[in-house]
Length: 104
Image (cartoon, rainbow, N blue to C red; front, side, top):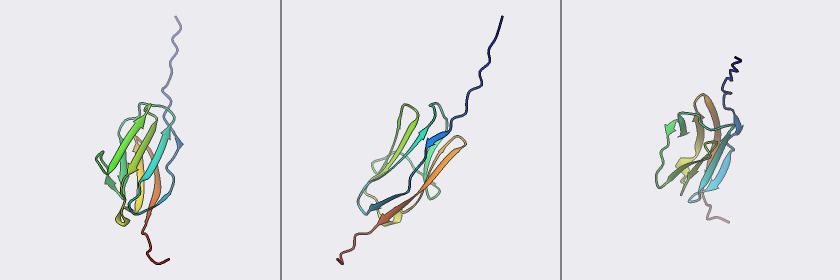
């Protein structure tokens, strides 16, 4: 009798968050892709505050590997660091919300 033992390969981040610049009132989308599904304790943060799915903050997941955060109708005070955490994996990027200048 031959028993083969496979150790579950730890997930890694294939594609991390990218810095994003948007104007006031626009939407900002951040995407993080993991090597495989099933990673526990997925959480999004903005400047250290946890984000939750609601009408302004859309959090979605595709196939358990592609995690997306969309911040709708952003304001200048939303500028900061967006962080994605999945277990021990972390990816961060800067969000810069630019005001619209009336001086042309």
